[in-house]
Length: 465
Image (cartoon, rainbow, N blue to C red; front, side, top):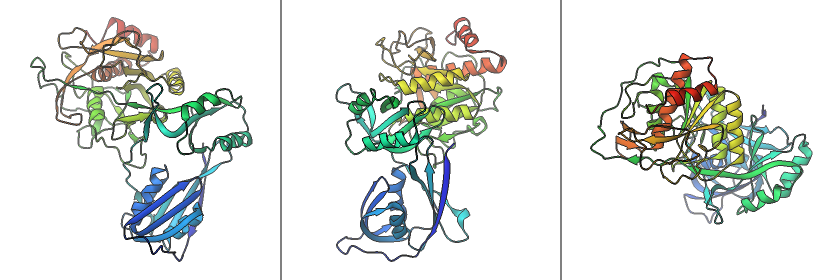
């Protein structure tokens, strides 16, 4: 567990105003524990979003948003915040991470005296900063690397290693022992990861890879009716399905299905879904919508997790933390309606460990019939799902090969669109979510069943039949 130390600071300070700045001007840079800030008549909450962009959780009374004028080049974070927050009561939260002596600012709370209960998380909608590796086309997060220290490495030696690469710990995952580390600007992450591979103090290093959500097809075939929506009913089974996708839209009529929920991209935000894809998959996985050609589904509880940002991108670390949440909240089945040609050793290991804990993993095999491996469907611990068309035959755009374990209906009429209108959609995304529903229904009826039993069920009572 993380050790937390809260430092309560109540300040009155005089601000140094830069006379050359025009109203509304904001220049801000956070580098480690140093803060550079020049602002002239800028709303406080606008400035605080700069801290939120660095992964610092900001909570504030929504009514507190004074115009701030302040100017300094480089100050210790605590002194810089003293200048910024002036007479406002505030609390700074610092965390130390296991395996390192580094202490990092992770939270800022701002409130009026006696009115702390009015604080709310500062809404933040920033997206992952994704770049492409020009050598192999893989996507990754700019200036971030994932590290797993060698067993028994002392905090002192790990601190020395981090200092040698200019790294700053942003987060630590207890289940996997993986650190998310920020590097200096414009770092060559693939080259550094390759260099680190020979370091006896580090058991593993790789970029924080990024992956796109599975793009569905908007099907306009007259053979697919616009029917298929089933009015939600209370869940009939008790096996929970974690849906790792773009979230769940409020007002989708799924309240009775949701057993737990998380925005893994911005945990301070309430769950939403700007894309619609996650809501589509939640409807299928829960049994509220039946794919075309399916006579029946079972209503089952779901755990919607927003793992993708507003541009439809997720990361290895976001997925790992999403899997953590699924395990912590009793999920038995995990549905992943996405795929990539980028392989991640860290994500594969995380899925393997989740599989060992009894979580049944399901993923879409891809909407391009290349026969090439697509991950996570191709990982040995994952059940990869291809799609059948309305005629019960393999859909022409479904992938095939080693990424596919089972085929299932992949066409459905959905009351929520993906970046567009509701209607008929097609894809292995739908097929994967439906297989997750079928597995959870089977486990509800056979609570003692294990993974081998599930595989036998899929082969003998195939969801495609």
